[in-house]
Length: 369
Ligand SMILES: Cc1ncc(COP(=O)(O)O)c(C=O)c1O
Image (cartoon, rainbow, N blue to C red; front, side, top):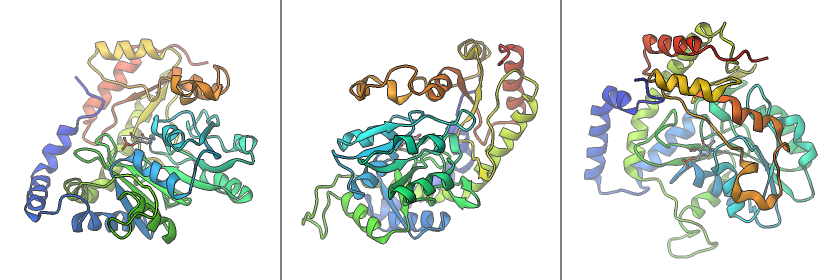
């Protein structure tokens, strides 16, 4: 049995230091925000080479707080990708703004910058690209469009802490970057958690205020915010784990390299690391015509896989009043039918990678073209 992700293996490696850090935190008496959280924020800011890091309760909240800080509201439109986790669009919707979906590049699965300008209207306030699977979107082109039209850019870097674009950190390539510490992320906590990074002091101060009900000072509310704070237990655990992140990302890249070799002659499309990008493979996602059949065959062999994501956001029931229909964003729709993520976590052994690759080869996927 090879699971898609085995968090227990990582815990076996580093559990004793995590336990020690958590136990000493428990003795400190500071459990929400406080010094341990501030320390972790400083560490993330340093890791990303940026000025401010503001923690919060989840990656979803990181996105929500960013949009709130930019003043996104009911009259506004935000251009984003339909091929992402639900949060990317739900946060726009929750502020009563309109998500405007722009199709993806079929090679990287990230928003296709050449399609963005056609989506810009007088109401457009921001662009929200996602660095899907751990690879950055084409940020130079996106930033150029944003500057030309005076738009904000927020990176959904939930899956991409440690990824790089032209040697710069994912999350720091625009106005605001958002990370998630959900356990399945490359830096995952033991519960929920999120972080926002920015070089803009005014935005940083605003987001710090918004995450504590909009209060500053305490019990005096300048605006209505939300309750979204990082638990100190998560902060100390994540601090310990941050030291290992680059090594884990390298291990994922090494595993991806071995898959690339072993699957080179299979009739499937392999993930492609775009020029100027350092992919950190939160997912290793292959593409295959008879995806569901391959998935079944792998399951029979005891190999777990997942589909990220089976239904693009523009076709979700909850967004039906936006008026999208099948065929509107064809690259996203085909990707949703053909992609399959296979195990890639750092602790995977070479033997297991060979077993997965062998099972894919034996399943004889339909020729792609
Ligand atoms: C692309 C993307 N955006 C946003 C999120 C939301 O993060 P969280 O689960 O921490 O709220 C996730 C992860 O779940 C994600 O993968």
